[in-house]
Image (cartoon, rainbow, N blue to C red; front, side, top):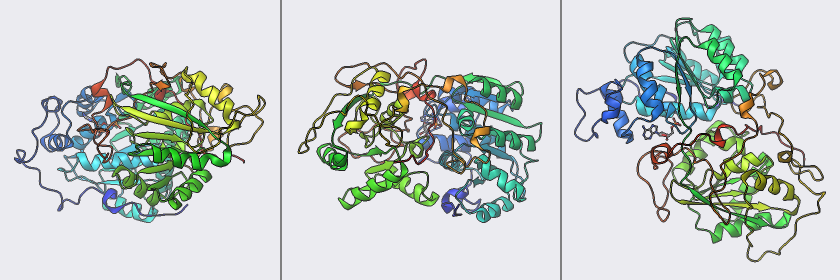
Length: 530
Ligand code: AMP
């Protein structure tokens, strides 16, 4: 694996001399600290940073977790991305750590994340929330220079944000000692389980002192997750929050049935016809991500690509450009898109019909903003009939056919036709069968070191799930709303300038009991045969 430095500005918090000194009272320009956060017992520098983020009210997980963490209690949080859980553990950690200094190679706290992207997102949050504190952090993730990471650790860090595999590598090479690590966060435990990281996590936990504080988060509490929580936590404060709310978002869906060789042409025509502000374009295979990306480039579109085989700096840079609105279209694979704080898009295009019907729900849930309309177009070839039927069965609504001007109409292939995962014909699509657990592949996203085959089995609540029932007609489908950012809402007619601009869905909408997003299986990203 190539070793590349993380973007310098993300590797560490501002050096003490660069960071503005904490002030006794906020400067006139700072917005006032929100009363809801003041009551939680956070310090002034943290409150100031929170106010500058535009947060006015703590989310339910924050309201419950922050006082407990500040008291030194273990926390067991059943919460998923989009609930504000990252600030729920980061804000009080910053306050706890602010009191004393880091020692060389002995981080004082550790945050474990299943993927590099999530680790990076947490690091970004750490920098934002900790901007008025003299704390630093190290990102210990695969795909980056181990030498650079080692150097940062040697200087002494307050927080290590790591994926399990790389952290163990670092430990084995003597780059890090965990005997002084008093706070441990295990984030997205259910995804760790899916990706086969639990043996690594158990190894890491065994290296930490027994008298640590542990904060454990998972979107689901399958028995295997509960077993881990029982093993890692002592008398935890248990917090369960509703998933990020459903769904004032209405998604208008459409299905373009075209000949296989017309798919790229169909996509271009659809993009040109639509008022696309920003869109994810999903392919089933990494190889096709590359091909489609190059094709769209050649046709002059503003486009980037994201999949698991790209080097880390390229992925980060592409993502930043897309979030900043410098790239309008992002061609991606399911795994590359998963877990990223990307939502509220004007359009989602399925260049390939997803083979797992649940992926359809997950993909199109990226479009639409709370209360606004999103568009999800799926391009199908004649062999995709069974996969489309599986989606329609799952969502309970037919995807309305749309014609693409200038392309010849085609019909579905015969009954026996069907596209197996990755495009081979003549087999049933996986979505028609009960799904076997799909596991992470070693060396992928978060670099599992243990063979996935040895991973603990998937808990029952991660199996195939039912999405929200349709709430409209004419192909308008309700799906779980994607994680939303903060701040001002942006009209469809305005240019979208990133993903920090929405009020989170959980602040706007009534909570629901369950969300398919909590139970959708994690696909691997195997290169399927042609
Ligand atoms: P998370 O669940 O931690 O991934 O957070 C989801 C999104 O909610 C992120 O974009 C955060 O910036 C945002 N967020 C977190 N806490 C709050 C809050 N109290 N008010 C508004 N937005 C928040």
